[in-house]
Image 1 (spheres, helix red, strand yellow):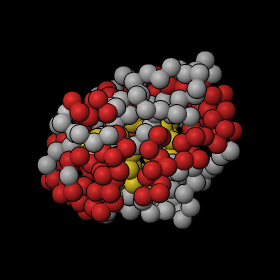
Image 2 (image 1 turned 120 degrees about the vertical axis):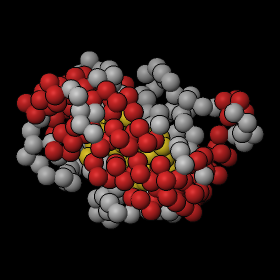
Image 3 (image 1 turned 90 degrees about the vertical axis):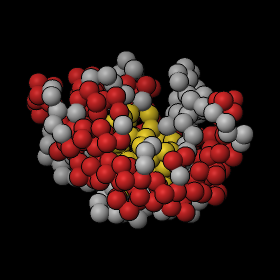
Length: 274
C-alpha cells in the first residue's frame, strides 16, 4: 500500500480537465510559505492554525471549496481518497496557488517503504505527513530520517484515530484506555524524533502536559456543538481544542457542508481569534 502511494505521489494526475479548472479559478500570485493569520508553523511561534480538510471523492468539489474560501484559508488536508482520485497534480496546484498541504497518508508499512513514501511527500512539497505511531519506533525513526532531507516537511505520528473508543481498542487487543494508548504512542513518537502527533481534541491537554512546548498537536474531530458527530467518537469544538493545548485544528464537514463555507470559515477564525 505504501509503495503504491509512493508511486502515486510521484506520478501525474489522469484528470487534466479538473486540474485545468484549478488553474482557471485559483490566483497564483502568492509564493509559499504564505504569511497569513492562520499560518502553519513557519517561524518560531506556534500560532493556532486551521487546516481545512478536503475529504472529497473527486477534484471538482475540492476545487469549488478552495475557490470559495479564497485567500482566507491557506492550509489544506489531502487524504488518500482525494489523492487517489485527483492525483499529485492536484497537490501541486494547491502549492502553486500559495497553499500549504497536509498529506494525511496514515502510513503503516515496513521502515524502508515508509521512508520512500515520506521522501515522495517531501519531493511533492507537502508540509506535513502522517505515519501510524503503532507501526513502532523503527518505522517512525525511518520516517523522520527521510523527512530530514526536506526542511519544510513535518512528520506527525497518528496515535489513535478519532473513530475509536476504549471498546474498539479492546477489539484489536489493546487493553489500555484511549488516553493511556494516546500518551504511550505520543511518547514513542517523541523519542523517535517526530515533529508532533495527531490525536483527538479530548487528549490535547494530556499531550500538551506530556510533550515539549515545541511539539505539534494536530487535532481532527473538530465539530460545533450543534453539528452531528459523524464518524468521530471523540470530538469537541475548535476553541476548546486550542485552549486545551492543540497547535492546529483540522476541520472538514462544518465548513465543506455549510450553506456558506466562506462564512463558516470566517466564524471559525473569529472563534479562535486568528
